[in-house]
Image (cartoon, rainbow, N blue to C red; front, top):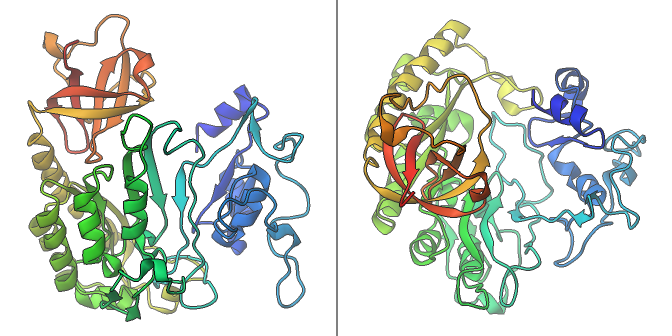
Length: 445
């Protein structure tokens, strides 16, 4: 976020929008002070406002619909009060002559599938939706598919992405779907499209030369209770789906998971993980963990450390619990002292750092396909994966840029090469490994 002010100074016409579960009505004033470079803050339920301003297809609109879908500035609550941002337009000039947002002369387009949140856990600020499941719709970027262009990658995004289709009525076209959610809240899914069906449909898209229309397909974030056998089979069968799964566990203690309202046990989580690793050999696994949640004991924290040792995650995103206003967890006692939270977090991160290094060292001397996506700005130091200065094989060639990209397993790889490689998939030999990233050289360079 600190770079946004610089970008706006360089480009006065730039408008920045922040949305997601961290944006809550009581906090907008504080967010404006904390992030002055942001022009507009939107709650997750205010997606139509963003859609209307950017001229994109809405997750709430019929398939193929664009633009005006009913901005939240015109919606009223049941008490008659206006919902959404103030009447003033924080993004003046963000529309083209036809009302759509433009960058130069190019219309913005979405290259991801956006799904709604349907899981109301105690510790997260997610917008409740009417009914048991939220509305979801499918989006396809124009140009991908037979006769169209090829996207190097695509993302299916949602805070519980693998609940896709659960709100839809049974359809004869999906009569072959015979499934049910058996973990947590039970749900009959027979005859309904699901994420597995959607993934297979996307994987089936081909360009004129027969290649997958989307070279790398990822989806985040999955919930363990909806990691079905059908979805696991689709991951194993579909060539465009990347060999990586982000599967948040949050805690290694069943008691803590119950307090969080997570709807699964560690036994269930471990069974699903074993099934996916059997179906997709070599798949990389990442997760989210919260330490110091309400009532977490030392033994319960030790159970989380034991889980790290057992699972051997490739990457862990960890944080110490802090109350979020408006969440059910605020009714629980935040009784783990701050210094204990810090100690537990540091202990967990140190344990995972050793595991991450071990996992990454397994890639040394291997050749991997890397999709280059970033031109790394120069910096004075690199503490992550130090390359010995005396090693000629790791020296950056004169005139080469520092680049980074991702493997299909979502491993971060740094390399040197022409800036023109951004957007290309290249073959890289891994020469150094750190706990968080790899470093390599272009094969044949």
